[in-house]
Length: 295
Ligand code: SF4
Image (cartoon, rainbow, N blue to C red; front, side):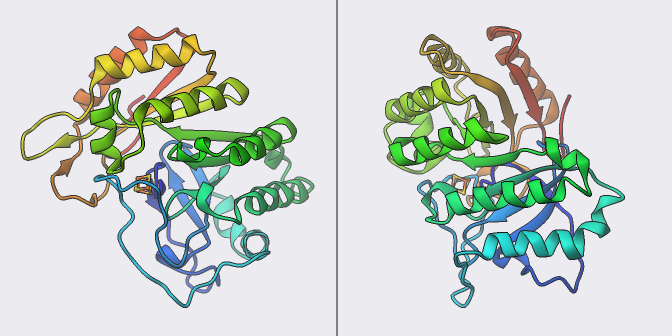
């Protein structure tokens, strides 16, 4: 999940009685998001098992199987409405709703229910605006590993949404070279194709890039090829990609591979400083250490 994903979260336990499922089987999960800086309501389109096009060594989604759990047409809207009717009052005194984020146990653009889930999130927010005026500013965030940008139908659907509602797209860009990208994605997608797909999509819709910075604890090597990564960012700029922000983050939870380790805060700050210095000042570079934002 990238969620659990790409947006690291300190989990906020829900009330014991609520019906929205527990753990990885949940369709709706309230979490404290370091990146969103508040309560982020997650929508998990894969409660039965992880589905992803990548196999990142730092992935925080454990292999699991809930063969009896089904997500069906209408489920996301029903679960969202149930959350706001029953559970929201438990959180609302303490937390501001920052976003509804569609990610979950895998790559959401693989789900046939993605478009419906986005529609449902916007419909529920709109209906809540009467009693919660601040919801008029709450965006829906799609968190993708960027392979969805290889599909024109997905790009067209997201572009259509972004024209009519508050959609944010957060997209993974790990590594600045084919070798580093292969290592960090655990997959064989051609790096140049992924970068081109990000560029094409970001020329239509602004994108926030999420980049993992971690190290191989066996060799001590930091798995971040700064020079090549910065060259990639500059190439995106030349292609008129609109990069809204860059989020650099490190491992905060047990990763899939035991040899992946997080960086300490000083290392993360140094890398963020280097990225910041190389980019135009209007691109915000956010930096997250093992325990939270380093701003
Ligand atoms: S394998 Fe990678 S892209 Fe897929 S869910 Fe895990 S971290 Fe996200």
